[in-house]
Picture 1 (cartoon, rainbow, N blue to C red):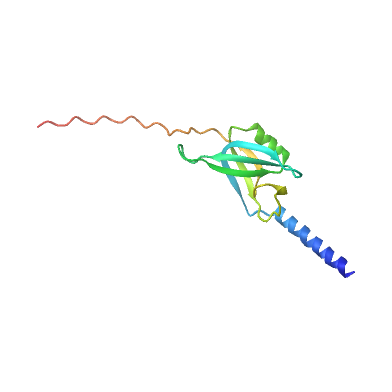
Picture 2: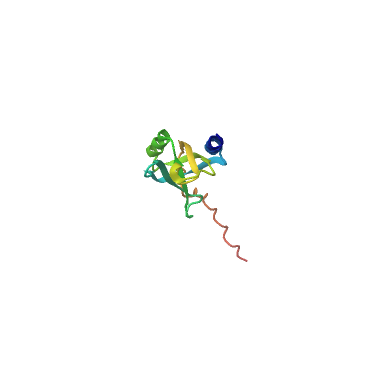
Length: 136
């Protein structure tokens, strides 16, 4: 009887932990950039893993954002928008015990296509000519 109570308590604690971890987000937000890598990975637990290049200024090094997608419908939308500028809505989950649920802690829940912005700065207005020097 005592072993059953201990095992039941242990199972309830583990189930409660998993419910908490999967339903609570440490943070959430948006990141914009270009998806450059996206694939389904895993031996037993297949998840979609991706890499997005984010460029803050033209000519600067791009920062990479690594993310995981659980939902196949969201993964299909990302595949359709591959190579285009997108905004990804993500939730950051902490404390997920194994990589079976994803290689990263950033889980994308929504993708939106973003209008392309020019990478080069806008041209400057033509300079006004300087007045000729005054002769004395």
